[in-house]
Image 1 (tube, rainbow, N blue to C red):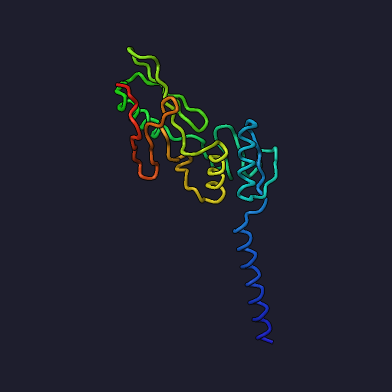
Image 2 (cartoon, rainbow, N blue to C red):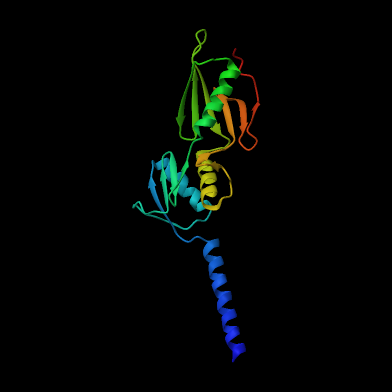
Length: 193
């Protein structure tokens, strides 16, 4: 009788452990609210399908995942689609020192990119673009979803993107910033001052 009772306890313990492992290895249905434009919605829907996440759209604010144009929230935690002001300033300083522009720089943050405009007195306005190392908008969305839901990519730090970045001028790659080592690498000269 005592052996039978211990057997039942062992079986129930195994079942509970199996259920817990299944529950935490597969988070279940994710309720998603898209508060963004169609391009962003399509990119993140595609990313959710690509990682085989089971999700349902939910138009209330009680959704687990809410996607906006410039950030998303997951269980209340904010993940921004841009880099921190510290990194933005570091990039501005590197561009400024690279072309010796002084304080004649303006920076504008856009979705997944930063546009730096340089006004020099003897030259026309020069535009630098800072973009993540990715082939497409969909690839960036996939990296974000993989990081947020599965912690695979490790591309967020304190809620800001820390992707490796390309600094381009007129589509020509000038510098590469490796976010993991915090190093800038010059790929080609700009031909400016």
